[in-house]
Amino acid sequence: MKILVPVKRVIDYNVKPRVKADGSGVDLANVKMSMNPFDEIAVEEALQIKEAGNAEEVVVVSIGPAKAAETLRTGMAMGADRAIHVATDEEVEPLAVAKILKAVVEEETPGLVILGKQAIDDDSNQTGQMLAALLGRPQGTFASKVVVEGDSVAVTREVDGGLETVKLAMPAIVTTDLRLNEPRYASLPNIMKAKKKPLDAKTPADYGVDIAPRLKTLKVAEPPVRSAGIKVENVDALVAKLKEMGVA
Ligand code: AMP
Image (cartoon, rainbow, N blue to C red; front, top):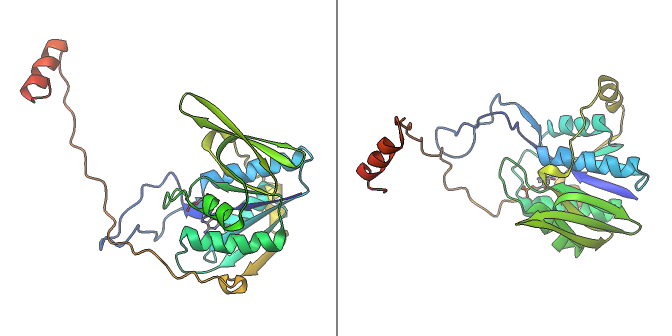
């Protein structure tokens, strides 16, 4: 079995995003970019399934600008076998990403596609679900545990007050939640080895997908600045203060 892992290059999760002065979006100039954290978890899970003898190959795919190739190299340094880079400088919305991934899936025929549950830049949480719908395949989303059993996969998700497990017939689509695993770091020798692994260069046109945006961003704004709190001496002072503010 082959596992396909879509990985997105996003603003690093440690960076505090700045909104552009004209409110048209987030300023990405000179900002550290990294693999979407949920996608690192997806790569790790695919590698663990391969290491357990349940898959032969892990392929990473990214749709994005030239630098997305660096993100793919990171995936290969973690252990993925090869990569597909669908190059575009346009912003690609989840529906267009899902359409491109559908075409990649039809070409590669993976038994599992493991995506992040959401990309932390746009927080859409749509691509995996759209891909499953476009392909007419079973989906298990927000996985906190994934167990491959023959030609099916059991996917557990944390729900209010417990755990829910669904069993999917493969080929299937899975999206990862934060507690699924701890992604490995790439070692220096593996970073060197990754430079020699195959990276296929494609474009959206190769897959016949129109990536023209369907959505228009009206305005992006910083969250309102919170005013500083005050400290009170004791409970009596707290109650008096709450009464004064009209909330008690
Ligand atoms: P989203 O629906 O945008 O929140 O993204 C969910 C998941 O879809 C991500 O965690 C990735 O696994 C995948 N994905 C989204 N955009 C891309 C992209 N441009 N290239 C590769 N994978 C992507």
